[in-house]
Length: 145
Length: 290
Image 1 (cartoon, chains in turn red, blue):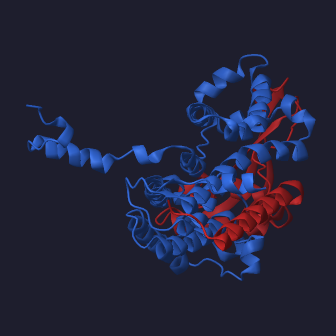
Image 2 (cartoon, each protein chain N blue to C red):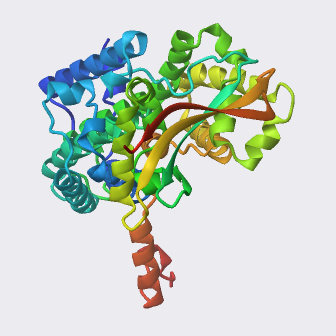
């Protein structure tokens, strides 16, 4: 059997304790910014059982007048990444121009976008179950000058 | 105390480390091209949208450029495939850990942090310390045992601390909230729509999720046979999650294999044995006794 030296064992114990401590601190007080020691907060919020649910999408209108839904495949940006910076887009809709640039870069040959907007589709929820009804709300728009 | 230290460094066969190493590094290669190919899209994302994580700011990591992103992608792919053979475990292992960590910082620095890969990151951080290991070698190693143990702890933390995060961000109301209904609206499958139609089933599922997450550390107290059943339950949980809200947690699934007796899975040896037998060779115990 291959055994560890006294020192090798001690270093491993200290590293384990330190890693566990950082994870614990991250869980109690950390934020996503503290990756990889941030809290495991996937699906950790508790929305009201009767509150409408937001389903966000980003869409653009190109020079041909077509409306295009912007996806990871055609813009290189994930929906959750847009949502993560949502407030920054609301405060400064001009940032959406960067999304139009990302789309042009990722979809060569496609007609350029003249408008980019973030739309939230509010899906009805009652007693923690979807009702099948919805309404759209535009929260940020950028239009090419 | 010595009991805990003994548990942390409980020896495992070197063959298990060799198999785990091959599996993890092959996963890294697969992750680059199959599971999270979108990271490479950030090569063309405008730098203005890059919001580096704390660790990226502390290390003064550069804003990703096409050269940086494509350079890391190809280097990581080549090194991961080389490391999967078990050669140069320290040199290749540390290089892969550093590159994959930076790859993840790039991935998570555009507004969304994923929570499915702490187990994998721990595995990548400790595999270089497990030393050389040949497939099928029954010699037991404490260094290798520690590497597997801390990966297992990270896997269990991903569940147990997630329950804690639910209490912190959602409170006790989480179990009766509309969190699963929201998830289904955002990315639900037809199966999920079917489940959502049954009154109270989603709320029951929420109680079940918290109970499972809180109970997950019990896996360390189970006998090997029951531990395998627990691992099967972990996987089944993720099968259901994928079938309903299309979230795979793939890196975590790779890390869960740290609980298994992987040394018993010898595909290369099986193929060799099969080919040898087709050529008419027989093993010692297969010779007729005369």
